[in-house]
Length: 151
Image (cartoon, rainbow, N blue to C red; front, side, top):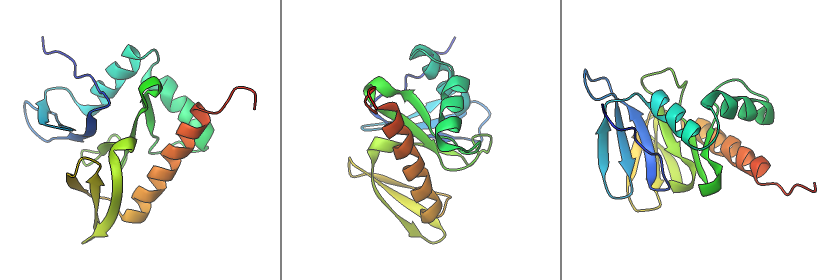
C-alpha cells in the first residue's frame, strides 16, 4: 500500500505523468516527488482529509464563479491551500498550481512560464491570458471563502 500524498503549504504544483508506474510529479519548495496516484485521486483524498469532498469543493466553486469548467479547488482553506488547473482536470496536460506560490508569470513561445516565490519556475501549456483568468477566478473564490460573516 502506497501512502497518500498530503498537499500542504509547501506544494507548488502537481503534474500528471504518462508513465506506467508514476502517475504524477509533485513540486514542493525543496524537492520533487514522483507519485503512483493520479492528480485527481490526490486532490480527492486531500479534500476528504480536510473535511469535504472534491465534489463539494467543486460545487461551491461552481456556484461562486458561475462556471462549470476548470474550477479551482480549495484543498485546505484553513491553511490557504488553493490549487488551480491549467486545463481540464481530465486532460493529461493539466497542471495543478498552488495559488499562493505564484509570484508572477509571463508568456513565452505559446506557453506560460510561472515564477514561483522560492525562485524556481516551470513552463505550463497555457496562454498567459488564460492563466491570468485562472488566477483571478481563484482569487475570487478565496475572497468569498474569507468574507466576514456579517456581510
